[in-house]
Amino acid sequence: MFKQYIDIAPEVQKALDNNQPVVALESTIISHGMPYPKNVETAREVEQIVRKYSATPATIAILNGRIKIGLTEADLELLGKEKNVQKVSRRDLPFIIAKGLNGATTVAATMILADLAGIRIFVTGGIGGVHRGASETFDISADLQELATTDVAVICAGVKSILDIGLTLEYLETQGVPVVAVGTKEFPAFYTRKSGFEADYQVDDLGELAKALHAKWDLGLKGGMVIGNPIDKAFEMDSDIIDTAIQLALKEARKKGIQGKDITPFLLAKIVELTSGQSLDSNIQLVYNNAKIGAQLAVAYHNS
Ligand code: PSU
Ligand code: MN
Image (tube, rainbow, N blue to C red):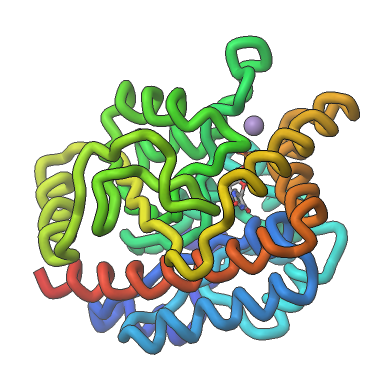
């Protein structure tokens, strides 16, 4: 039934047919997470890194109402450049398809589509979470609910402090979503390695992590896993600089009354501006770092 809506790129189809490791990549990060042209350059480089570590990249988006699993260079360019690409989460999927629009998929929507294509490992920069002040606004990203129900593991650099990291971890705990950190006990905070919060498990061996994923899904424990991979020390931001930028960005968002799906893209762009591009450089590097770990995990998952 669902297959009629999906176009799988030949390279991805071949890897799936031959039971070879595939890594899903999202597209909201391209269209709404970074400015052009660095967004397109990053998307291309991430695909190259996944290939270098022996997996096949499958960037996911919606083009003219068709679900695309695996994109061409021209597709990436369009997603990075066009202004009318919609941000697509779970609730948006039906209408973006019905209207034949272009859509960039969030973590939630990418998980859904990766799952339909049979891809279990997904690499991104940062996941959505419980926003600061959520007790008033009710703003909790649909990414968290998706992690509770859809069987895809998400490699990210943690949760950035535009969100309430503590509440995000509480929500994930309630939903039974395992949260692990790679090579450290501490759950990372995206631009910085430290968040002040511990992950449920420290992972030092990707083989063990692959085994845990098999065990989870073999047991029928629905849902994903959050795999927090800290940014490299060399690219980490100064915590005072980033905290100040985040505070200013949050203040401006409140003043302008920005809410709903617009808030995350607004804050990201504002933080890039306030740090004179430094946060963008960190953001790009952490995604590269995640692509490497994600590809290695996909290989380990297929070998175990
Ligand atoms: N965090 C980033 N860059 C991003 C996003 C989050 O550092 O591009 C995107 C992801 O696609 C994520 C989405 O799924 O924002 C969450 O949006 P919302 O908070 O509206 O659910
Ligand atoms: Mn939201």
